[in-house]
Image 1 (cartoon, rainbow, N blue to C red):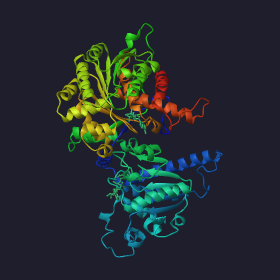
Image 2 (image 1 turned 180 degrees about the vertical axis):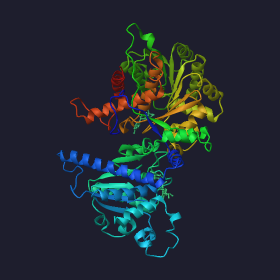
Image 3 (image 1 turned 90 degrees about the horizontal axis):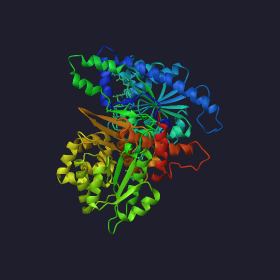
Image 4 (image 1 turned 180 degrees about the horizontal axis):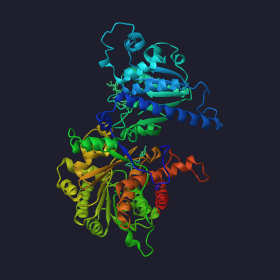
Amino acid sequence: MRNNTNLLPIKNTKPIALYNSKQVYAMEQAWFSQGYDSFGLMKQAAWQMTQQIEQIYEQRNVSASHSTNTNIYHRSAYPRQASIWVGKGNNGGDGWLIAYYLQQAGWQVEVITVGFSENYFDLHDQSVTSKTPNNGDSDSSNITDSIKALQIALASSCHYQRFEDIVSHDDADKRVLPADIYIDALFGIGLDRAPEVVYKSAIKAFNNFTQQNNALAIAVDIPSGLVASTGEVFERIAIQADVTLCLIARKFGLHTKDGTDYSGDIVDIPLIPYQMALQQTASNDTIPEKNASQAFGPVATLLTAAHSMKPRRQNSYKGSYGHVLVIGGNRIDGSQGMGGAAILSAASTMATGAGKITVACHEAFHGSLLTSLPDAMTINLHDASGVRDLIKQASVVAIGMGLGRDEKANALFIDYVQAAIESEKSIVIDADGLYHLASLHMGNHELITELREYSTNHRVCLTPHSGEAARLLDQKISKIESNRLQAIKQCAATYGGDWVLKGAGSLVLEQEKGGENVYVCNVGNAGMATAGMGDVLSGVTAGLLAQQDLSAEVRSLHQAVLIHGFAGDVLVSQANNNTNTLLVGQRGLQAQDMPAAIRHVMQLMIV
Ligand SMILES: NC(=O)C1=CN([C@@H]2O[C@H](COP(=O)(O)OP(=O)(O)OC[C@H]3O[C@@H](n4cnc5c(N)ncnc54)[C@H](O)[C@@H]3O)[C@@H](O)[C@H]2O)[C@@H](O)CC1
Ligand SMILES: Nc1ncnc2c1ncn2[C@@H]1O[C@H](COP(=O)(O)OP(=O)(O)O)[C@@H](O)[C@H]1O
């Protein structure tokens, strides 16, 4: 669960637009094409980050002095000490300038360079180059912004060391300034591959120093090692930041996949009015409007707060709130039964407030279903004509949770989805339903085309995790995980409908006429990485869809994903808040705990 998770789900917060690296570079270029200077922007960035660093230091220092935990971050009061780790790109340039500004502000600073050759400084330190013949490398046309930044820092005698020189000594840890704050300016949005060996060991050393000194780790723009456009961290090696100072625009990769584990608190430093730059660039003949909006339109929106709901009309009855038919919970001869999947899904559907529920599951589970959920009606999963009749009466059909993967289950899946299409029902497909869908796609079955066409005018929600998405797209899981955004878009293009790609920072894609909206869910926690949690999500999705009195936004897939995540966070936050009730923490959180929390979240959403 992220520190900034807002447990008041309907609090109005402005949606946060998320961008990839290419787009941020394009924003910068649009700004420069208006006559602004790139080094001026770097100085502005470094100056604003320095202000933030001083502020963060003061705040943490004050809170540490009020804390009884002496182990918490606090070192010497004065001089304040900063260790700034720089790479050779512009991110490193920001680092050199931060070092310069902090030193001007009275901090003791040390810059640790990574990837710089031994003679790099002789080539670029102006105090040296002005006394030596020009050897070509210091030709002003070769002077990049990051070299200009280095020159400013060296001209003010900022102390620096090469990481490569330090690590060659046994007492390497004694050779680095033990600082209050460690600043990571190794890589920014330019990281496009796994860090090379020396960077890997620098990243590990940075994390170790921070930990040993109980110091604060601040990342410039994005923690080094984390890919801004995908949220991927190669080989689990990245800077573990307490705070990320995010420049210009919020990066998509900070919020999905590994991003949430490494970025800490995020502070935005917008720097340039990029929306204005967009408009001006679009009106510029050199960039056609379509390309400009493609370059600047966010790749996704960060979901942090749920849409609110109105109280129910007094004059209403169960029929006003829909009838969900859950189809799943099979028992295949000679294999395990999966009744729990259908039961969890059904219980979660009821917790959202759906009016009626019928569960079509194997008869072996009817008894246990009714014991845990007496409000449900039941029918035998294999009673095909009975289930088809019920599909006609239902408002939503949720299919696949524990349905089984054998041929019989495959035939039932085809039969029931076709019946749902014929009766024009909203459809939710999860788990084994997705397995069958993938098989049908591989066999070029006509149902795939039918479903895609149907989804252009009806609600169809599909809810895979990466493993299921991999099968649906006939790709390796690692490929899906390396670019989750691309994967969800491919799923939607292939099968139609609205999609969630589950996991940390779940992605949601909703189709709308002429386009699609993509969201990243900022709630939920690792306690939810347990069996049955996906069944709960399918139940919430179906339950919301069934309630036609709710607004379209509340019945959306992204709202379902938010409610599901908030419910998980509510349960875990009870543990964090140390209430007197029995606690449920991240370890031990179970899918069966969720319906009660879903009810709680639904209640919080009413205004
Ligand atoms: N251009 C500008 O005007 C501004 C840029 N800013 C900073 O500039 C950063 C982007 O700068 P850059 O585009 O130079 O990118 P980086 O500073 O992230 O560095 C890219 C360099 O690292 C190399 N590299 C990438 N992956 C590597 C790997 N795995 N192992 C070893 N080397 C690798 C690249 O080949 C390239 O030389 C932003 O994140 C931000 O911090 C800010 O100063 C704001 C203004
Ligand atoms: N680390 C996490 N952070 C946020 N949400 C998570 C995390 N791990 C799992 N979840 C959520 O829990 C659910 C798990 O679903 P799934 O993997 O399909 O479980 P199952 O198949 O056992 O029902 C998904 O909605 C997923 O997004």
